[in-house]
Image 1 (cartoon, rainbow, N blue to C red):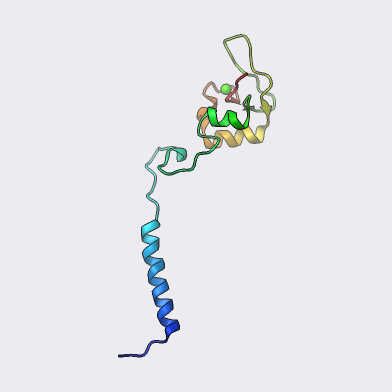
Image 2: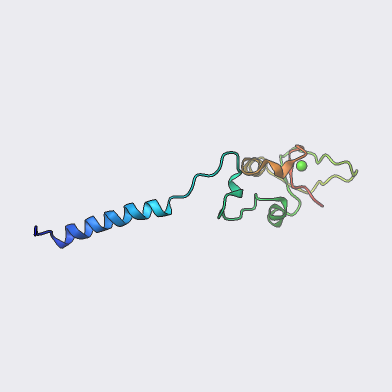
Length: 108
Ligand SMILES: [Ca+2]
């Protein structure tokens, strides 16, 4: 039998384990059209829905000069005004502003 140094043997075994492990843990590709937050096993984020979002931002987040468009006659005015945070929320989940008034998850 050919002599193989213990170091080389360990390297070969490690490479084999890494290759095998990579096949086992490789995540399945998400189905087309599914939002990232709906992927199986995805960690919850504040952008999943307005309940989570309002836990962080109680009155919602809007663009700096946005106005809550409401039919109730009592618009929310005390939402956090931040173009950056609003854009980030929209990049994660456009449903957070379904009425498209540039205020995400507005609530009193
Ligand atoms: Ca809105």
